Each structure stands twice: as C-alpha cells, then as structure tokens.
Amino acid sequence: MKKTEYKWVIVALCFLMVLTTLGFCSSSRTLFLSPITEALGIERSKFSLNDSCRFVSTAIVNIFFGTLVNKFGAKKLIGAGFLSLIGAMIIYATANSIWIFYIGGVMLGIGLSWTTTTMVGYVVNKWCRENKGTIMGFVLAANGVGGAVATQIVSPIIYDKNDIFGYRKAYLLIAAMLFAVGVLVMIFFRNEPEAKASEEVKVAHQKSKHRGKEWEGIEYKDALKTRFFYLACVSIFLTGLVLQGMYGISAAHMKDVGIDAEYVALVMSVHSVALALFKFLSGFLYDKAGLRTSVNICVFFAILVSIILASLTNSAAGKIFAMLYGVFSSAALPLETVMLPIYARELFGEKGFNKVLGIFVSVNTAGYALGAPLMNLCFDRLNSYRIGLYACAALMIIVFIMLQIVITEAKKLQARSYSVRS
Image (cartoon, rainbow, N blue to C red):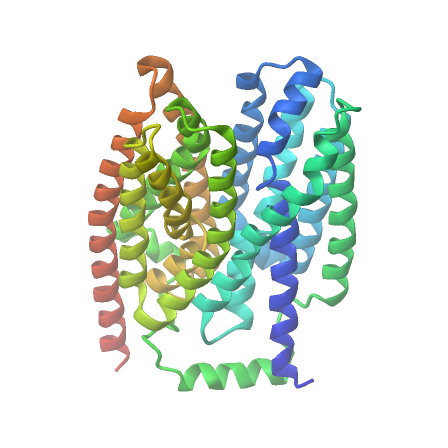
C-alpha cells in the first residue's frame, strides 16, 4: 500500500468510530427512556436532565478542543474518549440514583466530544486534501447507519418482557463493543501522515485550486476580531437549538395530533436511513457547488419541515406530511454536523481551524441543550408544539439571512488575503 493511501484506513476507522459511538451511545438513547424510568421509578423530566448534562459537558470540552489536540494529539484524545464512553455505559448499567445517571451524562458528553464531529473534522482536515466535504459526509453518515443497527441489536434486550432491567444488559453489551472498537482504532490510528506522504499531500494541495477550499486563512486570535465570527456563532447556536428542539419533540407531536404509534415508528426509521444518505450528499454537494449553495439547501429544508411538522393532522394528508418530515428533516441536519468543519475551514482557513472548529461545535451543542426544554416549555404553556414549530421556521429564516452575510464577509476577507499575498 502506498503511504498516501493510508488515509483510507484512517477514513475507515473514523467511519467505524462514528458508527459505534454516535450510533450506539447517542442515536439509541431514546430506546432507554421508558424502560429506565419505569424500572427505577424516576420521573421522565428529571431523567431527561441527563441529556442536558451531556450537552453542557460537550460544549465546555469543545471550547478547549484546539488546545488539547495540539498538546496531546488526536490518538490520545480518541483513546480517552473511548474510555469515557465505556465508563458512561457501565455507570448507566449499574446506577440506581438519578444523580449517578447525571455523572454518566457528563462522561458521555466528554467521550462524544473526542470521538465524533469535532475529532472527525480535525482528522479529515489533516489527512485529506481533496473532496473533504464528501469524505466528511461519508464518515458522519455512519451515525444513521449505526443508529439503525443499534436499534435492531439492543431493542430485543431492552424490551425483554421477562427482565425489567434488560436495559442494563444492553448498556454492558454496548460497553463491550466500544472496548473492541476502541482497541482496533488505537492499533491502526496514526496522528498524521508520515513525512514522505505528508509532503506528497502538500504538493497535491498546492496544485489544487478547487474553489479555494485550501485557503491558508487567519489565526484564531484574528478570527475573534472579525464581526462575522460572532454572527456565525449565533447562526450555529440557533441552528442547533431549532433542529434538536424540533427533532426531540417530533415523535411526541405526531402522537399528540393522533397519528398511530406504529406509523410514527416507521417515520422515524425512514428518518434514520435518510439521515445517512443526506449527510453524504451534503458533503458531496459542497465539493461540487460550494458553501453557499449547500448551506442554502439545508436551511431551506429546515424551514420547510418546521412548517410541515406544525401543520400535521390525523388524516391521510397528515400521514403523508409526517413521512415527508421524516425524509426531508434529514436534509437539514447536516447543518449541525457535516457543515461545522466546513464552516471553520471555509470561513477562517487552515491556521485557526482546530480552535474555531471547537468553538463552533461548542456553541452548536449549547443550542442542543436549550432546544428541547424550550419546545417542551411551549407545550406546557400552550398544550401544543405548533407555535414553537412556527417560531422554529421564523428563526431559520433569520439564520438564512445571517449566513448570507457571514459567507459574503468571509469571501471578502479571503479576497483581501489573496490580494495582499500577490
């Protein structure tokens, strides 16, 4: 194998890592809610704070991602991430107190910080000089694949009628899978290409003029001085708030309007499959058409599905709309995963990439933490999610406008940088 081809081993390891960590530790989490709360007699509202602990810890850790990865390297952080996730699964399997679950949530957030979007964005950026969007989309599509696989594997264990604590066996099984995959990743992962391969990649980089995506960029400290950095952060925060808030209540809203549970389950299954497809397509579209086009398409679908979900009724047309939501909501979700590394590199270039990416993921995750509570507060006050969903559509229109300003200002900055260098 040529040294330059080892990047495909790295890409495969990243795919496997995302499939296992996000697919089994995150995408499957809704399966555990009812069994755990019923077995231990815990109120769902109190147990759901476990997710808040996860999102808060992820947001805090990602603020320091650039500093940590520069000091320790990707391999050590990935190893620590797997250990943290294994610890979280063991805690979940043995906890009898709600406070212990919260500790598990913190460890889950730390583990996912070092094994998913931020880390994958860093690794792909270091190893791959061409078609980064397509490769990022492919790797993060593993989340949807992993979620579908996890559902089939752990559901029979969790819902074992002869064992109300079946969820504990499921968590221990996930811990064992994480250990096996973690060992595999640690054996074959390399922090960066070897000297000769790295030089060949740099040459390919210099020859490539594909849409200016390999812009040298500005330092992180200089990025903080630009106004559009903060506008980008607000846009990313609102995107996380809207998309996670909307997704978190979608199944409950469908049931509230009278759609039967079996059909809702079908919609969510279609959503998982579509998510894998659209994450790949969003990265591919970015490579072919550029940032503005790919972002605008994602935002358009976010606005569309907000209105569709708000308009649902228990009718034949309502079921069609519900299925359309299941498919096209997946076209919006790349805004909170695939697009974050692309934003960091396209808007501010390579120099400050690691730190900017960490901040973007952090503010996005902060949006996650607020999205579901705000939507459920809307339900508690109005006995419906409809007003909240229409508000989501309005917020995404505002996000669309802000992102046009951000992208335009970034292009001006890049043009000035090239002008000075020439």
